[in-house]
Length: 167
Image: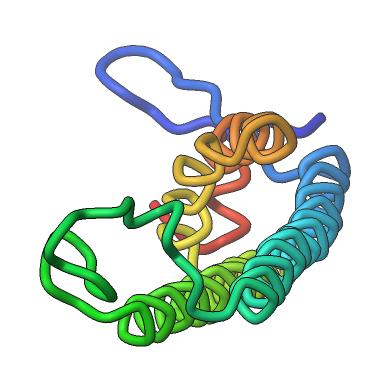
């Protein structure tokens, strides 16, 4: 391990040079981000399955929401808020489709974001972007938490910052 000395007030400060271990850790982080991107993309599958199941359920039930709406005397064919069963079915279909599209978009955007971080770590660029993503990954329990902590630890090293051209 090489050391670079720089004079500071009557003494020396030892600064670590980037070494093979730092490069190896960055390579492992890059691979970890690609794997987590794949896991994030697979996270959209349950959203799709539950959405399709919900749409199928509404299709099977049709507009017979008498159990959900209750039988209110004097308001036959409408719910407590004055809407028709057809309008309620349409609203539920819209809600389910919005949730499917939103869930899939979140999964795709997360996967692309993590893949971009993996590429940038490999290229040794965008240190701040990669570092802040490490903090955000801590919310992706359990795999993202582990990868996020290791990303923060590795990217915070002065020798790794030097590899990225920071500081």
